[in-house]
Amino acid sequence: MYIDIIIIAMIAGFIILRLRSELGKKTGNEPLPPAAGRGPVIDGYSEKVDAPHTEHAVLDMESNQELRDFYKDIRKYDSHFDPVAFKEGATNAYGMILEAFWAGDKDTLKGLLDDSVYEQFSNAIDERAKNELTLENRLLDISNAKIASGHMAGNIAELTLQFTAEIVAVTRDRDGKVVDGDVSDASELNDMWTFARNIRSDDPAWMLVATRTG
Image (cartoon, rainbow, N blue to C red; front, side, top):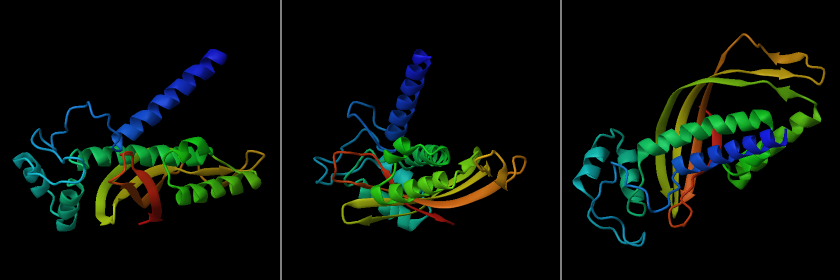
């Protein structure tokens, strides 16, 4: 039994580390993503140098002018930033955060949310426990994930994504009776989540800073 617990803990730790990597964490030894190319990079996160032609080609494929401008701005400080990899990591984070919230797993949430969002999630978990309610929600599919907007607020880069997901949502009371939802009926979530990080910080991990229905 103790061996099983250790194995589960190791798997959970691996998942969290992999997720933080997908959201932007890098060691400095990994190969550059295709969007960044292998030409000159930003020296010391402060001086802009000429970007390779491949980067311009990728940026030109983005039809949203606001996002194109944002990607150019952020790459002045982080030449490794790749919108495709970011979206994949954020999608994984979306699923992990939902499942951690449903399970009341505050430890996982703490590493993925900023303080204000964590407080909201934590309070909701505490209120659920106070009322002796449990969730048996299941994430069936994330059918859509799209970067909707991005902007710079000083040194803080913020990216908002639109997610559409299909879930089964069931709430049970302390006796196990279903008080909300239906185990055989799927429902759709439409969320707008904003992730942010300080682009001048040594920590490249993105954190969830805002959520709303959209």
